[in-house]
Length: 393
Image 1: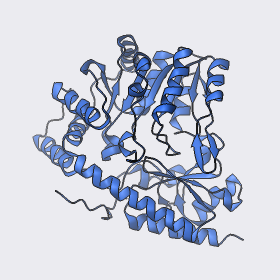
Image 2: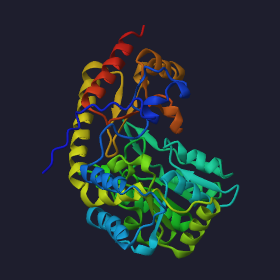
Image 3: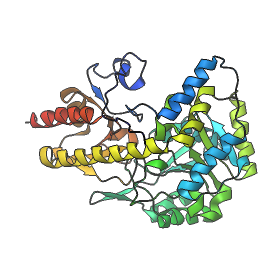
């Protein structure tokens, strides 16, 4: 068994890192400590690095495709971990899940149609709808006693009242950290089936569901919706490969798949990044040991954060996650306006986090923190935050 050192601090500045090198370009102080964008400060698994080294040593980076072994490798991951049986023809590869969401919106809706999302939610969900001339329809999650749940009555009303033809499901949910139960998925599925709504299920964080909150692939939970569902997956979050630009999109229905591929073709996109394909296959083949150690480390970071807030910043409340590597912080106890909260985080604490307002759904008093960093980085960030809060009048 190989031991991976997640405490190791690796310098990312000066590498054109979006997370570390573009603060000023994005209107943030250059000395703000970034815990915002969802990539990790950990090196990818050694089997991935070995596969990439071999590809680089070969030295030819021409157009590439995948053969049957790639599809079998990816399919095996979901069969063994989630009990989900797929078929090779279902697989369509794209450069990213957000790209796939946009292609699905274009393929399955018409301009002016309503597209349902559950807010607060990952902010590109808004842009892929609006930028393609469709209508954002919000089913706001209920926040009661520190936990988010689905308002199913409103879910149905929003579909009926807004000519909704497509539902973008975030599962597990980013940023609130819910891992939807089978019953919740089935209730949403039954309503969508009743009104003929297609579902695009973004399951990119599925590998980070906590053991006590098992993740269920949407069409596994709602088999009757398989023919109306697109499932979006990727190794990018699980193994820190986002910059290599490969996602695996599963589309069981041939008619939907043809429409989806047609939208990709209209964009002029064809072969994916060769190194991304190599890395993805290597990750699903040999990365499980790294992933399990990473998940354990992330749970320890979460435990550290929880204890720190309880002891040092009780005004800020952790919304207990059931999965993902985010911490969703309820800062309403600070009694600050949204603008004042953002100023506290960015200019007093010198932290670059994702402010809740970006996610919609009345989340102006929240902040999202990425926990996928060495403990020392997290400790430094929390000390900055504690000092800033203590400075409040």
